[in-house]
Length: 418
Image (cartoon, rainbow, N blue to C red):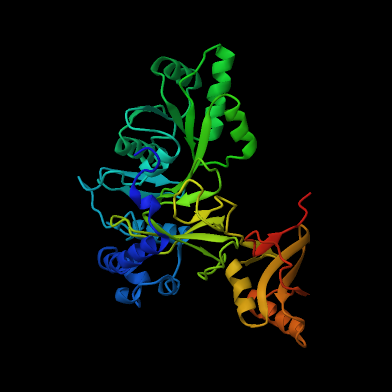
């Protein structure tokens, strides 16, 4: 098998969807039974009824800040669960490691092979069994180093645990060990390559790389290509592991086979149409950490059509910014969910975007709404809803359909901070 990691990647889309939806009710039931936090969050949910994306979309979204809040509340109680009731594992052989992301949010690592499901992404980046990989993701506190190492081992590769820092030693190790490629952030590989050039050390074996944790613009991709290194992106989080990965086609990122992904309007749980930018929400099929409708806080959009490589899973555009656009206006926090609540009061409103302008301490806000036509007194009625929901006054601008940019922004902070 040289083209695909396995045959799951080339399934008929309908076959894949049927398999995911068949697995969903059991995962929801398991989450309710084995994870205390999810038992509360999903208390009113009948798992047997969650057999479609439409049914899934009715479930609440749990966002990262809510996960952190539950962990903090639980840790404040003597003997409380450090995972806030989201993990189904206990300490011991079933949980060989646990990690801390900023917050801190604690994440368990289960004992299963390729727990984070990274082998598929590593394969798509060009790595093959029997190769040596130089892994420069951090091995302490955060799970990134372990995520990549476990995936590389599942693929059949040997790993040099380079970690972060010590640039000259990284160059020396690469020159002596001759790894097939690098895994880590793109900026650190650039630092290593520049340092190698400064030291007069050639690194001819490093011809491929898999990047994560940072933006990877075309300019940097071309910079590596000019030095004989083909770099590909992966998109993963400490909460759910691998979500999507780049292929040789370089046309978006293909979703991993072990997750169910939705794109929702920021601040809500409402799925948007394919192609529209929104927040990426993931339902994990991992029994150890069964996050159901986990809001990543990242913006993305679905790309039309299959990947030219022959992989048939849905493609996304990749990371397009952050979905949490909460901002403070005249001393009051305004949230995307409030903008959505205003829009939902009026069937005539198709899309809405709150634009904040002015200078510090002199804020002005305008709710721009797309409508079909201009129904009588709509602007004034929307203005009343703005005051009711946000406790602030704001202008209203009615726009024709299709006027607002497709960038996922619900609140645009256009103030001058000079």
